[in-house]
Length: 456
Image 1 (cartoon, rainbow, N blue to C red):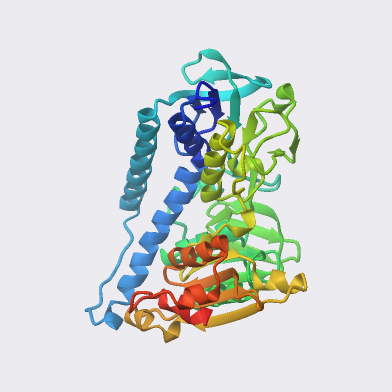
Image 2: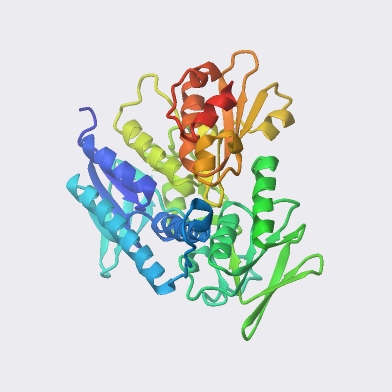
């Protein structure tokens, strides 16, 4: 195979880096992967996976509280916080071991340490054992991820004032938690800790949560929060935090104060590019993100960036796809026509209760652009399976081209939304029409039937 002797050096072992490593190795490359923390990625294994594990535990507690509605005797569910920590640790350990084993089976050389550029195709590694190693490469892939953004006014201590990295799980279960940030991560924390019984206040800088999502979806989530007793401080921007013994107070720009036992910062992330020495290789960046083209290639030939560092969608699925595409492009497989990554067709999910998922063109964005669309919406309350599950909340919304019937996007609020959105994602990616969905023979009874009904 052409390029089979190419030397890959990958800095960062997150989803993008590990996927690139395994695929490049399968294509015959000699691959070295440098990772300083955890193989599989800190953002993935220390943020994403633990948060979903905690949410699953909270969901089980909620289900058990509804036992009587399902024809069962009532069961009291109490959280065993230590057992939850052990469960999360076991999941992380098993996944890291699985990823490490896969890399080893492909012949990938793994180095524990940090790497930085010393030239366009050279990398210096500071190994964890104190040694220094200089590597030459034909292909360099930068996949160092990101870290929580911390404003100057936030006195992060890891005990009372937390970032996301301190909260999966936190040192102790908060009695009263103030969450700053109403994006995806923030609302997941609200859901998670309110499920565990914490009193939660959410500081919302705008007039509704999830400002980048469909307003109807955001409104449905807000109603769920209100029903749970969550306090929403809308139109309030946090600007300082004070800690007094067992009290933490968040001071907002409009004079309001949110008080709790703990504060959690969830206001985004910044790229881990500070120590890469990008200048030594002449790599262009913007706001710390490496500037890349549609092949994830930087301005320097042979140097790629993927994952959060690329400045594209900060999703593990996107990082993995970027890693795969980089391996293929660098090994000469994309010389002819091929499909580039279309970030506008990436499906995403929010693991609240109910779940939220979307893909493709959003209704609000289409209207803002003056684009003609057709929108159909069907509630899960018409689904026999939703009634069987005792959870008829939410809806399916599908956005289509009114002339061709091609599926352009969709959003789902409801149980298993993260799974169901895959059908719409496939339709969007493949250019399927509503007729294709309507004529699909879905299982009965199943929540997926609502997709067909929404497509009619």
